[in-house]
Length: 201
Image 1 (cartoon, rainbow, N blue to C red):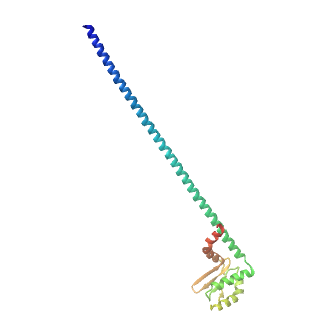
Image 2 (cartoon, rainbow, N blue to C red; image 1 turned 90 degrees about the vertical axis):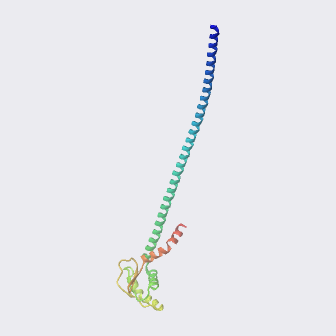
Image 3 (spheres, rainbow, N blue to C red; image 1 turned 90 degrees about the horizontal axis):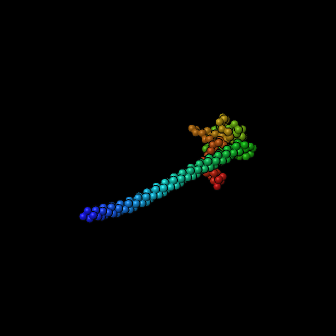
């Protein structure tokens, strides 16, 4: 009887141990599966973070390069524009020097043509120091041309010390600047874009 009890107890214990082992194996298998799943999710997250980081790095690099390129283009245009302006400035400065350097008949012809074209008639001529003698000498020819156009004669006035070449026409309540400086300034306003086109095509 005691043997039967011991056998029964041993069998019960063996069955409990077998059941416990089965449950333990099932839990271990489930735990391994969960661990594998967590690892896969973690790897997926790591890859996603890595791809996002690489994307942001590439975008930041592209943005920096684009900004640098844009700034370089703006600087290049700015320097090119300044260089073009300097060349145009030099061209007009050379033209002014050329006008001031005119002598003899070419200068007389220029002064006469300017006076006939610009005079309304009856003004007083205030010539530059450089052109006072020439204007006195040319006055009769200028007035003859004005008379043909039905305009009153010009008369000589004081010397205009503040201009480098040419003259001023002083009328009733007005003064017309016919200096070389003013002539070039007007020409520059009208022709600067054409000169730039010729120089830089």
